[in-house]
Image (cartoon, rainbow, N blue to C red; front, side):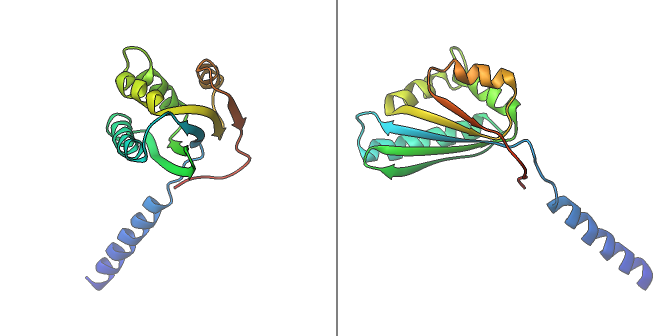
Length: 148
């Protein structure tokens, strides 16, 4: 019985350790530089909270979505995606008849997107979709790394 309990406890411990070692080498990060579009700080704060909740609710493969004040009338958005498919889903969602079309219309009413830096390896299809947005996009491919 003592041997059985020892094996059971060891098995549980090993399973728990293997769960925490899951990594993602396909993560892609967007670093978006924006200017506030004639809105007050309160309007920007309220909208930023609304929009990140909208994305969180509709896009389960978005790992995070955060807005940061970066200067007078300047905002940085950092979003993290599981992979290129998650980005394609987001672009479809913000497009005409997409689930986030209305929210994105309000997004561009609140912010002027100056530049998007894409950190990580994206597919050619995603690059084409992003390049069609009419915003400067800079690609910075991953050399090495992972996310947990």
